[in-house]
Amino acid sequence: EPEVTQTPSHQVTQMGQEVILRCVPISNHLYFYWYRQILGQKVEFLVSFYNNEISEKSEIFDDQFSVERPDGSNFTLKIRSTKLEDSAMYFCASSVGGRAQFFGPGTRLTVL
Amino acid sequence: QKEVEQDPGPLSVPEGAIVSLNCTYSNSAFQYFMWYRQYSRKGPELLMYTYSSGNKEDGRFTAQVDKSSKYISLFIRDSQPSDSATYLCAMSATQGAQKLVFGQGTRLTINP
Image 1 (cartoon, each protein chain N blue to C red):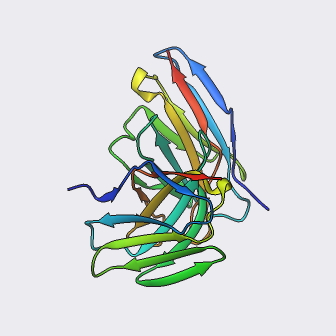
Image 2: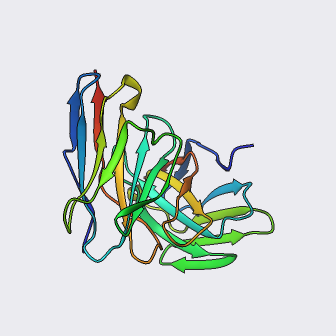
Image 3: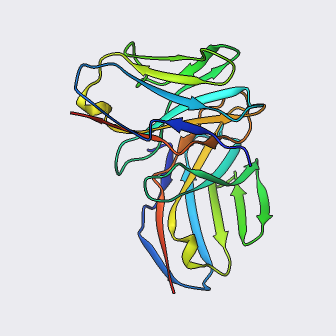
């Protein structure tokens, strides 16, 4: 069964450093998303992406964040200058036709 | 008032019991309703996807949506220890690149 994959599973970085989180969505899906979940809190929407552009973004998704689909299979989330409060699980999701979203296993980001 | 409210539990029931999980919401624009299961430090796994009001059954799982009361439920019949996880409700207003709004999640333990 096709699934969303994410790399790395765990990323440790120093405050102020740039990180890139990578995702490979399900191959025939057209809509892509990033969410995050701070430990013990609810899953929060960051951004949605369709037809090579951002469809919607949340207040969390400020100028420090960017997304890219560099080729036909990868979808990336870049954080330019990480802060302590960026420590969280980051989930990529994809959907076909904007219906049910399927989530990846997540990348745990730890900012020291 | 929070957009989506879900009792975080924890909820503990004996094996074989019927489990009832619920969410309420305040945004009347929500039309698409989902239930996800999340094991510790893993990605949300889609269980049920429903549109508008009514019931949907899939094996031991039944999802109910009552839009007039802004209330959704997930029932698990013949619960198993492997059902022990956190259950997240999620909902969206649009079908396109839809932003999902999640509940806090209910932590469920099924005791053998």
